[in-house]
Length: 267
Image (tube, rainbow, N blue to C red; front, side, top):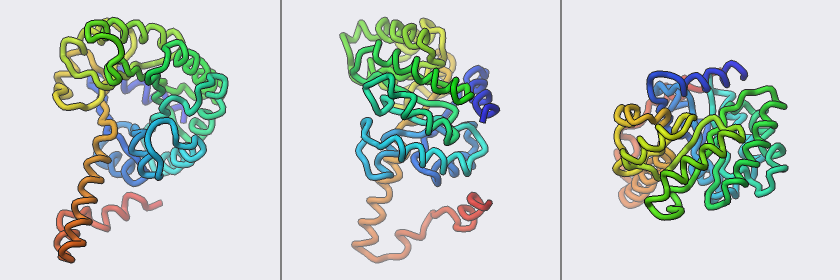
């Protein structure tokens, strides 16, 4: 695990932007690895929905740790987990919720401020860092700030506020800054040049392509919950059409070969 942790840190220092399609279960993680991903990130929304929960700090941490263990059991590359808000508003409890996830093999986490106060997330990051040190794993802590996603403050104040929060989170022990909802090239450039830790953005309509983001200073690009959204919309459409027609072609066209999937999970 320590080797995977160092490998994951190194991916943020590469000349190439780190592109992470987000997985939501063991099968999606393995398929994404087979597609050529250098690391796997989970989507909190995708994971929650797949396990029968709504998104938003509701998933029981024990279940997340169990899923983490199942995913790392089949992967050869680093896994970073969307840890939402840490599943507690009490920073002193972060170690209790995070330790099982680290023990299960995660070498990175996202932990977010949402609409909470920045100092609360900073305290959570401090406790997360201590939990990682106790476990002997150099966990990559990606601090997510929702300044843009939640439209906190006036539009003109958001770049400065994001940079200010980055400084706070870095001082607390964060290794990266994740700013979902950020899409304007000028704002991306300003934030990337104004912070000292790697910038992560998430796919949204109108976001520049990866190579352009790389030129703007972005070090990491994630797909968020969009891939499971596409998959489940496709499932819904196929199921409806099959229910209506009973036509075998509806569910037997353009499938991934059974043998390919079997080979992915051979021990």
